[in-house]
Image (cartoon, rainbow, N blue to C red; front, side, top):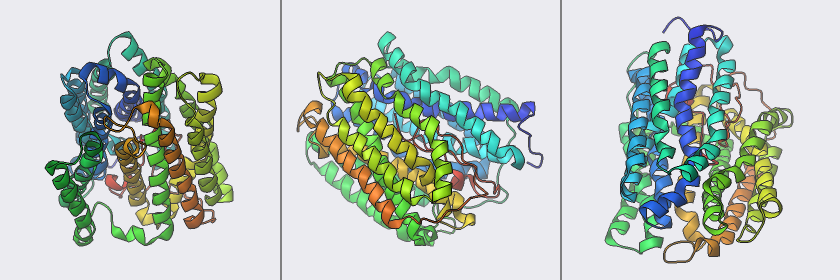
Length: 497
C-alpha cells in the first residue's frame, strides 16, 4: 500500500476502531475468564486441573503461534489474516459458550488461542502499515486506550454475566463484537503485505507447539492423577522437541527468532526477569481469583472488582514510570518494582476465610499494583534498547512470547508446588504457600534486573510507548515499516485475567 492514512481522516480513525475492536476481543476474553472458573467447575465438573487447562489451553496455542501469526499476515495480507482471526475467534467463542463438557471447553479454548495469535500481532501491524509515520504514535495511543477499556470493564462485565445468567455468556458476548469488527475491518481497513515471499518457519512453530504441549501436559496431569505411560511419553517428547529448537532455528533461513539477539547479556537478563515476574503475576492472580470465590465466598462480580485496583493503578502510573526510567535509567525501577510487587504477593498470603476486604485484601492488591506499575514500562523499553535498532521488533516479539510462556508454566506448576490439587490438598490449605512462592519468584526478577540491566539511559526514537491496557505490558509501535509483523508483536495481554 503506497498511500497511508492520516489519523484525522475518516478512514484513519476507522482503522484504529477496527483494530481496537479485534484486539479488544482477546483482551476482554482474557480479563473475564478467571472470575468465571468456579462457575465453570460447578457446571461441568472437574477439579483444579480442569480450571488450569481452561487457561493453559488458550495460552499454549497463543504462545506457540504468536510470532508465526504475524509472519502469516506479512505474507498473505494483514487484513485478510486479521479477519480470519476474528472469524476463528468468534467460532471458537461459540464453541466455548456451548461446550457440554470440560474437555470440549478446553479444546475450544485452544482454538481461541490459535485465532488470538492472528489477532494480537495483526492489530498493531495494520496500524503500522496503514497510518502515516507522523500519526502512528498517536494512533497506537488511541488503540491502546480503546483496547484498555475492554480490560478495565472485563471483570465487571464477566462477573455480572456469571452472576446474572451463566458463565457461557462470558464467551458468547464475543459474537456480536466480532461481527462488528469484521464489518468495520472489511469496509475501512486497507490491505497490506510485505514485499517478497519470505519463508515461514513452520518447523520451528511446530517444535515450539509440540514442546510446550508435551511439557505442560504432565505438569498439570501428574499432580492430579499420577504418572502414566501417556504423561511419561508426553514429557519425553516435549523435552526433545524443545531441545531440538535451538539447532533447528540456527539452520533456518528465516527463523521465528534470530538467535543472535541472545548474544546481548542485557537482552537475556531482561527476558529472565520477565519470565520470573510474569510467572508470579499469572500464577498468583489465577489462584487469588479462585480463593476469593471458593474460600471467601465472593461472587464472581465481587472477585472481579476486588482486582480492579491493579488495572487502575497501572493505567495511571505506567506511562509516568516510563518517563522516570528514561531520566534515571531502567536498572533501579526494574529492581525496585519487582521487589515491591513481591511484597504485595507475600501480603496476599494473609487472604483467608473470615478476613475483610478493606483490611486484608485491598492493601496487598495496591502494593502489588504499584510494583507492577514501576516495572512494566521500563521493562519493555529495556528490551528494545538491549539490541540494535534493526532487531528491536524481534526483541519485542520475543519478550511478548516469554511473558506468555511464563503465565502458561505458572498456571501449570504453581498449584502443585504449593500442595494444591485433587490429590494433594484444598485451595485454602496451600494458598498461602502459593503466594509466598510467587513472591519469591517476583523478587527474583528484581535481583536478576539488578545484576544484568544497565544504568544507561537511552531514548528510543523509533519507539512510541502507548499506555498500558491493564494487562501488565505497555504497547509499543515501531516506525520501521519494513520489519515483519511477526517481529512487531508488542501488545501482551498476559496478566490480570
